[in-house]
Length: 406
Image (cartoon, rainbow, N blue to C red; front, top):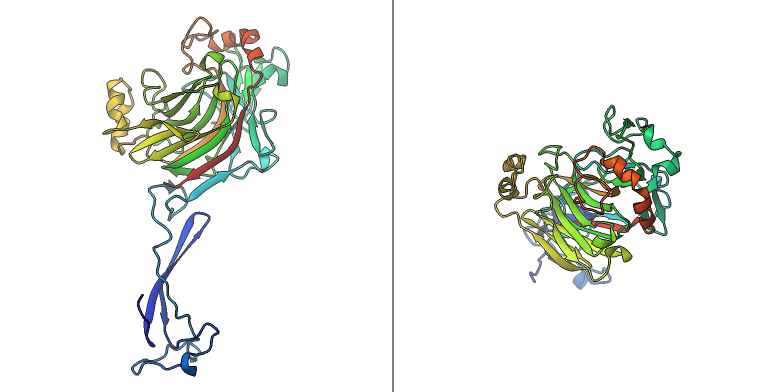
């Protein structure tokens, strides 16, 4: 409510927000040279400067033009956030940082994602290979990831041959991530699935993630709706650098009502599922679309489904304490980080579909392979007549992915 006088100087700064980024310009300065009415005419028909005022002169030697005299004050439009985004600065509290609604008609037109083309390896050794054709598609604004039998793409018996992905492989060239040759019980992965990530486009630390998805149904299928570490600062084996599951289910009918979410910080039990949270649904999770959300903070994590919180992850004095108590060999790597280590580095969004593997399903009479048996893949393949008929609704479907600053 301060009243301005002729000759008063106003010092100000300008802050502009565009696409969630803030841009600031300091050292703004305006001087009151006259008062005007709303129609632009001078008050009292004249402009009078204060006795001791010298007009601002432009470089050309002319008097500065008339300037607005109404000044409004407000709080800065951008409040800082603990969220960090690789390659960006000035992250504003609550800003929408990433938004994918799959409006393109072709996977190749997605600018925020890259597909994986490789054989996934340790630590879980799933029974699938990631490829693009036939597995990744977009229809009516929905991303669909579909499992396809390897032999249906090539020919019967192809699991006993070789597959070289080296020309387009996104894994490490010269390793089993890019080329595999079958030998005896070590057959090729019998299923092709798809996976896309923002690894080369969008990486962030701390924030709120919201994903609307319809989960897959079918024996031994699991969705990948995860955050994965960009640089694997704490190590690249056995989930040393962590994995965050935003929504995880097991496709078998017996598990269909159980939803899990949270961090995975070890490849093996008991610590693999130690921090995971569970939500028992009224009905099977795969029957409809749901909103799966996760809030990732510098001091903890919360998990939600359809707006209802079902889990909180508290690191206490650091995850390394409980990990060490559970004999996790890489726990001491996290001491150099914050209490959230290893979940205190940049992560990216990953969407995919996996089959089987040696850690997500415990051994039992209905399971055709044993996790520690070197014939796990071929035993799974030989039971195809039991599991493949259950894959009648096996697609993972995603409507949107949104990431907000805290």
